[in-house]
Image 1 (cartoon, rainbow, N blue to C red):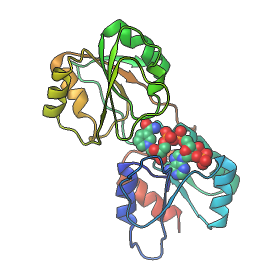
Image 2 (cartoon, helix red, strand yellow):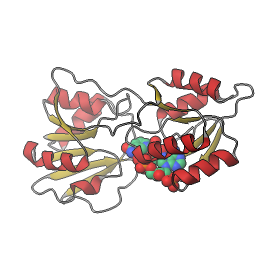
Image 3 (spheres, helix red, strand yellow):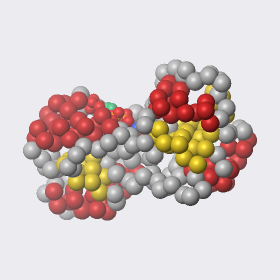
Image 4 (cartoon, rainbow, N blue to C red):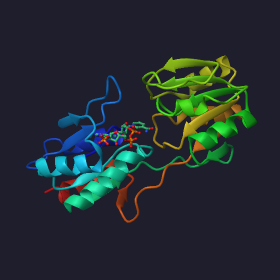
Length: 242
Ligand code: NAP
């Protein structure tokens, strides 16, 4: 299983100690202090689709489940290719996207550079909560100060001016409201990540009537089984992997 998400940890926990099925979770190794899944874990990139295919063969892997983050599109494309090369079953576990509430003021963005174009049309004090990667897409935005929040420090060119907060969810609505008020936030930028861990910022923005730039998810490969619950994905892996 390709992990790095809460869903991946839940699937690993569900399958831990399930008889003769051995589950290995793979983490990219990006976060300095990752939340560790139960069971066997390996860490680090494979070296593209070819490297992953070799690893699958060497380790006699019978089925591959991609439970990575909806925005981790490179590893998903690599996994799809590698599974086809090896002729093993492949499926995705993707948490559902957040549904827009009637009071939400959402501005969809095709990608991070589109989001960077939208921000200065909507506000001057932006709360940038898109994770560590991709912050540099906002480096050329003028006339906007950014409050950047990520688990580990972003790499690459930062927008100017900015303030950085290092924090890991889950966050609650009260603290998100307090943060947004204290920093005079007038526009929020988020990925369409889904899940409970970071939804509080969406609720807080709704309560404050703030516009939210929502970066849309990259597409998933065609014709691949996709489960939106860890329970369903775990039972798929349990039967496909034996
Ligand atoms: P990505 O752009 O799709 O992948 C970049 C490269 O990282 C891949 O080509 C692969 O290297 C390696 N990689 C990614 N996930 C891996 C895994 N589970 N096991 C082993 N290698 C992996 O991925 P990303 O957006 O950098 O995300 C990296 C990890 O962080 C993922 O596991 C994802 O679930 C997690 N994550 C991402 C986000 C996000 O917003 N993107 C948010 C939360 C968590 P090789 O080509 O060398 O194999």
